[in-house]
Structures are given as structure tokens and as C-alpha cells.
Amino acid sequence: MMGGLIDPGALQIKRALWGNRLHGRCTLYAVTEVDGGQDWPGAGVVVNCLKGNPSTSSVQELSYDEVPYTWFWVPIGTVVATGYKLVYGGSPYQVERIPPIHSDEKLIPLGCIEIRVPGATIDG
Image 1 (cartoon, rainbow, N blue to C red):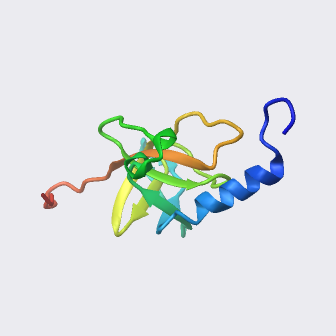
Image 2 (tube, rainbow, N blue to C red):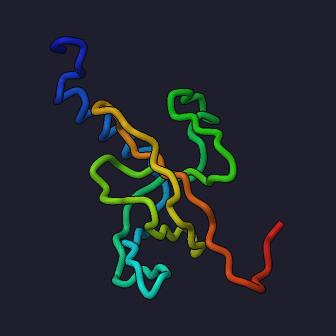
């Protein structure tokens, strides 16, 4: 380690280990502005992800409790921005918040809000 930074090789190994914990898959769609609204054209990109707050499984450094977000975690290097649509298990979400990350982060947290269709039934 040099000057308090994580060795690049060790960081790559840690990111790979975290990547193995990503048990789900989601599809990300880039957003475009169309006539004062938003659209998500194109095929989208499928990435591994984790839904929820990993801190419930004793990983405190990955804790985000901000309501009303549903948190998804995707690998570092995933191209994503606020406004993107994320589809997980057939349910669409919009990426509303991406907290700042540090160079030694292993995953990118995405604060998402479920996209509701007017008149649709809400489970629960």
C-alpha cells in the first residue's frame, strides 16, 4: 500500500469478491428527453446487481437508509446516471440518487423509486 491507498491488485480482488455477492440481474436503460418528458429507448444493458440494503447482512459500510428509495448495488464501472430506468424482476424503477463514491469503492449504490402506472394494482 502506498500513502494510505489500497494497492490496485488488492482492490481488484476485493471488487471481484463483492461482484460474487451480486445475486440478481437488472436491465439499465439510458434516459432521453422527449417533448418535455422522458423516454428510455434502446435495448438496455443487463448487469449483475444486489437489491436492498446489504448492511442487514452485517456489512455496515454499505448502509443507506434514505426513504423512499429502494437501493440497488451494481459493479463499479457500470455506466449509469440519474434518470436511467432500472428493471428488476419485471418491475421498473427510476434511478433518482447516486451517492458520491470513493476510488476504493467496490459497488455503486443506486437510490431508485418504483415507476408506477396510473390505475395499476399495488401489492401489499
